[in-house]
Image 1 (spheres, helix red, strand yellow):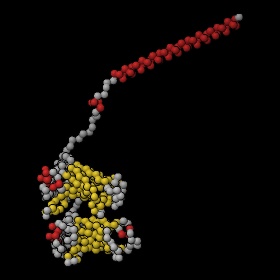
Image 2 (spheres, one colour):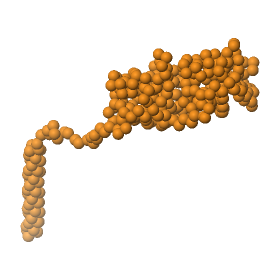
Image 3 (tube, one colour):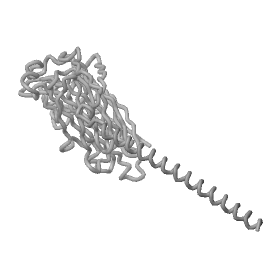
Image 4 (cartoon, helix red, strand yellow):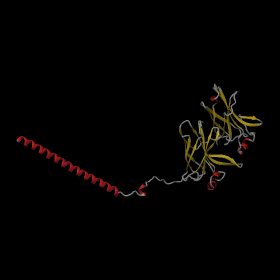
Length: 343
């Protein structure tokens, strides 16, 4: 009997302990639920109390710099600087000039064969003197270089710009000045040229003022021409000097004994100091076992030379020409330099 009472007592103590533990856990859980409920309510209250975003809240401050004009803006001695970048078969130009705001600029791209149809862009100079161009190259263009030219012609701008620089551009000065002729009048314009080599997927060249070095006998009818020749597997590069007047048209062509060489030529106008550069396709691309070739650089007043001061200096038919390079063809005088290249 005592043994039964002992067992009953142990079981009773165990049940009381379990009941007490369960009651305590339920109390703790209830307290936690109340805290969580209160926390959620507080957060909801805070969200409800948050003010709505206004238009001013959506604004942010940006770096706004004042547009400043160049101190030399409008000077007759014109400067141009900048970069030309070739990327994705497109030329991107960013530059600055002291030309008056609103001056109209033209951007031309030329190939070694001549002007590219549609290769022209125009823009106006901004208030701070900056300007931009972009021009896509023709699909399939595979020449090693592209020739670029930025031109300002005062007669092509608005009335205010034309009045400042005059229609003929006579007040213009500096290394970018080039001569042209219209209505039998010699005029001035601004021309910045650059050659962009296309041997890399992306490249940048600077727009820089040229340095002209006129020879002492510049413009003399006793004409001389000197040239150096370089080549690679595709092209022949000719760098020349002369005392010819600016704008004189000279042609470089190849002569190969026993071959027809039509197309192996390049015509250019000489620079203000008589210098010039030419680029001619190399005949070894089509002629195997080529032993050599002859480069002939010629100048004739009656051939593609329409500037009046050139004809006045050298003669309509070259009758005033003098020197060791003078040749006579069809009763006309011309200048010809021959350079022989042998392998």
